[in-house]
Image (cartoon, rainbow, N blue to C red; front, side, top):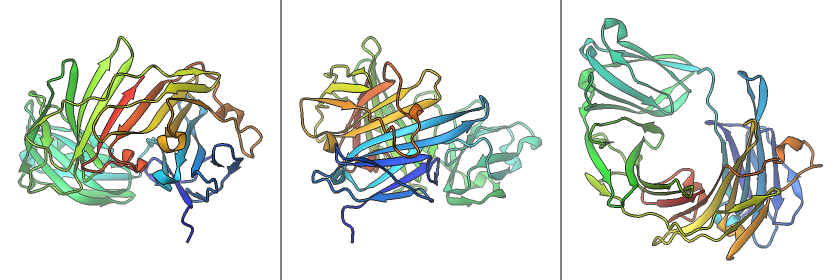
Length: 381
């Protein structure tokens, strides 16, 4: 058994696929080595005694509107103590969908509105006549929870329907929807006593389908107990935006089921000098969130070129950085490595954002795929 092997899975949207270029560095001073894969799974075994390693991954995609190639780049600087399975996810929204779900609503829906969610796709039909009762939801093939909210037109939604683990294959599928399938849902309030801060909540049904809606009293959807499962995930969030100093702070608490009133009165410390950037080198001071049980987990920064055709996201974990009062990091130049494109080395004057991410979980993958019970806090310039 290879106990120190690192496994990298690259995803383009929801599909695990190989990317244009991926290389790794063993330790902080090791030689960069290109890796190959046919299915989006890359492996290597770090030999550095400190467990540090880095990854440089590039996804190339074609923009048909502007008829040019774009590049999304992720640079990960991690330590084996923080996890040896590394998911690298490149966002992707298809121009066309391979599946269509025809939802056939009964005549009792005339005069009602609905909000439909399935994975990321969603729709908001209004049923004014018999001609409106078939709604075609374009979807990505897969298995997600289908969620429908419904209510009288010009009123807040009051009913919910959930079809758990609904699989849709490529092609066309059908489902009949009756008003009797729906149940009343309740709501909860997220609030705070902190001046100039905003509290709210969001919901991932089954952990995979985000739903969003608006209520006149700023309350949030809460699934009735009869339909709830332990896979549902609520994010209770509190933010503060200091626009004068360009500092944004966010605290998030994850739970399977919120109370009727959630009072959020915790924010990460605002004491942190703005990180500097020059000649592709970052310098910054260590950050302490000053929240009980929250430890600094990683710094995350992004760059974008002037044409907005190339963006870089760089993660620097606390395990890779080690303990220090201040840090310096230079973006690596992989010129000379097989398959390298000089466009992938930044030529920009400033970063888009630089943030410090703290929380209660030491497994960094949990900050991509949160679990109930964990907390996260972020400060961002």
